[in-house]
Amino acid sequence: MIEVQNLAVTFGEGASAIRAVNGIDFRVAAGETFGLVGESGSGKSTVLRALSGLNPDWTGAMRVDGQALDRKRSKAFYKLVQMVFQDPYGSLHPRHTVDHVLAEPLTIHGMLDVDRRIEQALAEVGLGPAFRFRYPHQLSGGQRQRVAIARALILEPKVLLLDEPTSSLDVSVQAEILNLLQRLKRERGLTFILVTHNLAVVAHMCDRLAVMNAGRIVEEMTVSDLRKGAARQAYTLQLFNASLGYDRAKAKELITFA
Image 1 (cartoon, rainbow, N blue to C red):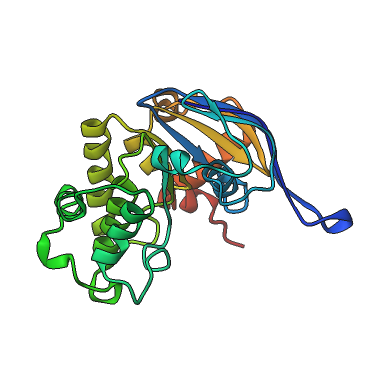
Image 2: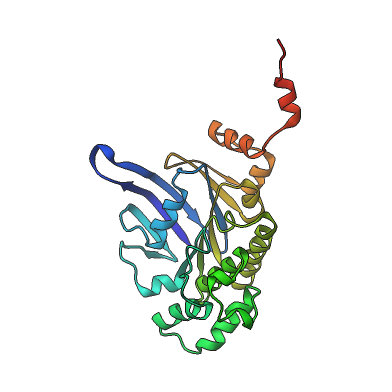
């Protein structure tokens, strides 16, 4: 479904130029969930922005569903590929109702039966008709992210690009959103690329993952390998160890007294 070859993204020019993504390659099969993991600044979100068309300044080659991507994307592309952002409050217009948010893409793409589609989209993400005419400030963080997911799905895409979709939510809400995404993926046969720094989320959601560092992919592995801790690269091992959090027993071993 997705092919990326020698993708590079540079910000700035001359001596101040920053190579955010440095010649990466990966492929994602139809119906697969592929994770991009790494520390902040590793280039994960920049990859999604290049794929989605939000960042047109890239080199290399990208294909989605067999179609080569240009810097300028067609309307047809945005019916095929949609993105869910990290901050659901920032990605929703504060003065637009949920109804407006969901109706706008339908209007742009000339899709009919707007009322039915909006009601169906809300129902699919677990929000009833009462939410249709609310504003973002009247919703909780989890409800806002459900609206953002509904907006992404209302054009019936095949691919969702998920940029840390639960990182700004309370822990109690994160599992609800992840389970919602899993259910929608099964029901619609979607393909996901999931960007996150949370390896527990990757283990729950993904089939395969790529580890990024300083704009490069340092290792690809299956989630089965992730669960076994079977990393090959030193950076990946360090990332995995950091994700385990504070170990009281290990800390006691390191305590010394003069």
